[in-house]
Each structure stands twice: as structure tokens, then as C-alpha cells.
Length: 70
Image (tube, rainbow, N blue to C red; front, side):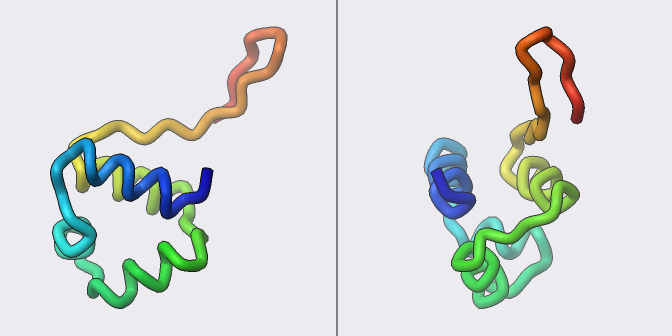
């Protein structure tokens, strides 16, 4: 699944548009679209996106032995 797909699915669940998200992030709609096209977001930006849509964004590596790195 791509970053675009994840964000668009989350927006659908939150009943928000991409324009809503761009506004909440303080980004132009054009910048958000460019970033969605490249799929390049920092961990901090994923956190900001989560907060902007009212969700918690978790980035974690979970190893078979149960160890998590986040």
C-alpha cells in the first residue's frame, strides 16, 4: 500500500478532504498533492498528519521476538 492510499483511506474514515488536511497542516493543496505523488513523508510529518485528522500514527518495527523499535 502506498502512502497516498493510506492517507486517502484515513481521510475517508475521518470524513475529511485533502483540502481539509492541507489546511490543517498549513500546507497548500498543491504541496500536499505533490507530497502524495512522491509518497515521501518524514516520521514527524506522519505524526502531524495523524494529529490533523484526529488519529494516532504509529511507526514501529516489531521483531519476531516481540522487541519493538519506534
